[in-house]
Image (cartoon, rainbow, N blue to C red):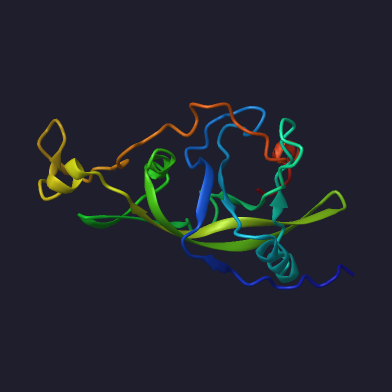
Length: 201
């Protein structure tokens, strides 16, 4: 008889520090296979890391930098964004124009957005495959407030239209935008984990 799994309550992390965004599911080998949408939430402290472990979650630690032997590992929680099975995640973007939803086709814009604040709710999935077990964090909801620059605020009252004159909702990236993938990606200790192929997700 299989052991009874302990239920892991969903958690909400307000003002989450989001890094390594790949809401588009782009291929970024060796870190990410095409179609896998994910990001990480950097944790505030080792105390938060240990608290999540005690609750049944599986936070991770970055590797020490080779060029800085005194650097300390940083705790983080990998989060998967999944579409196609069950209820899709709730994705809301807040600007001076109001709040609107993103879906599977538009969530990619978060990869380039200048995020001022992100509140995230995640749920746990306990998996078992070939005798191995683990816990994976899935995004249930995210509410993102965009940091807008002066021009965006000045013209926020004017509706944006497409080439046919139909009003569309603009996806703003915010001021001082820097492409987060322009620099070389850092190995956060997840290469082997991201290469694993597990059934059902």
